[in-house]
Amino acid sequence: MSKTIPVKKNDFIDVVFEDLTHDGAGVAKVEGYPIFVQGGLPGEKAKIKVTKVNKGYGFGRLMEIHEKSTFRVECPADDAHKYGGCQLQHISYEGQLKYKENQVKQVLTRIGKLDDVVVHPILGMDNPWHYRNKAQVPVGEKDGKLIAGFFKPRSHEIVDTDESLLHLHEINEAIKAVKEIASELGIQPYNEEKHKGVLRHIMARYGKSTGELMVVIVTRVNEIPQQNKLVNEIVARLPKVKSIVHNINSKKTNVIMGDKTEVLWGSEVIYDNIGDIKFAISARSFYQVNPGQTKVLYDKALEYAELTGEESVIDAYCGIGTISLFLAQKAKKVFGVEIVPEAIEDAKRNAELNEISNAEFAVGEAEIVIPAWYKEGNSADVLVIDPPRKGCDEALLQTILDMKPKKVVYVSCNPATLARDLRILEDGGYKTVEVQPVDMFPQTTHCEAVAKIVLA
Ligand code: SAH
Image (cartoon, rainbow, N blue to C red; front, top):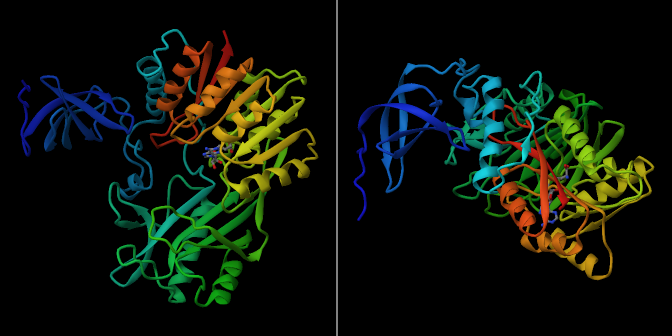
């Protein structure tokens, strides 16, 4: 027998928020029935309007706050920023840090069944705004005008935005300039519905320590109309530009970049430094977006690896070899694995650039390359894993359990999959010693954490 639902669509009700979800919505309960409301904060009393009623939970809209949380702050800018990823902009930075730290603790207990793990206080930023070194903005059309900005949540409607509070100023400038130039030259924006038009995305990436800017123009078609003029204007208006790249994505897809990339002007890569190491970064390679916090994160990973110079180390999901090269300075040998071929080319180039000769790299899926490598009789003392949000593939976790490295350092951008994978490692004989959350993405709900796991 199903319980009756205590609210109806369009009801106005007074609630008290008890919690925040992993995507930043306030949770209120009416006779045990949870209602999710964007903008509500724990402890706040408010009036909401019920907007959707499902069997086990509902959604509501925040109408009026009767009693505010001490963590509530005035939103520094208009609504558009919410769409640009600032889902937590209504929470003080102190409150955001607390929220993320709690989130890590909660999932470790709930999903990982790890009750006695030490979770250190989260490492945050001094100034949690204008930190992102990369943006990729969708281009579209509104009232006959070329626009670029952010998708509204759960929609394909683009909100035209010139200034993001998350991006470095150089990135905002670059996006705005390219948008204006494309508009002046009459380059047709992409129309997603009809799969027509030319310009799909503008991407910009900036090496904060070197002052080098890369602009990537993503188009549906092979030829960019007025290409020379476009390139000349970008060079003229953006003096920091070192690389202009064209990526062709002719498919009907949400994926931003296509398979074909050509350099239109300047270098194929830009450079950036993290600590003492210099990195070449090409258009399609993953590179951490928060330069200051990246150093904090990698230092922690290195600390947890506890290298003496004698170890052989695997860096799975190595990207352009960032963590690998950090580790190589303190290890005997590092073996990096990554799925994107361009990233591995960058990784090799980066090893050479820094005269690091004890790092090797292979292209492929970590869950295929590492088991095969192990079957050939190879092994490692320390494994570092830094997977995408979906976490590690089971085949890789199984290989870790078979190979039995003394230590695993898990760098995670998704606490839920971290907790799931830690449970598998624990069941296979490992012990999670400590977890350090690092705020790589202030104002957003995203949370990064590094875990130290040892053979029990
Ligand atoms: N450690 C790097 C990259 C982390 S991001 C850094 O800090 O810069 C995760 C990386 O995993 C991305 O470069 C992505 O291309 C890669 N990747 C995704 N799935 C993979 C898989 N199955 N096997 C190997 N690499 C993968």
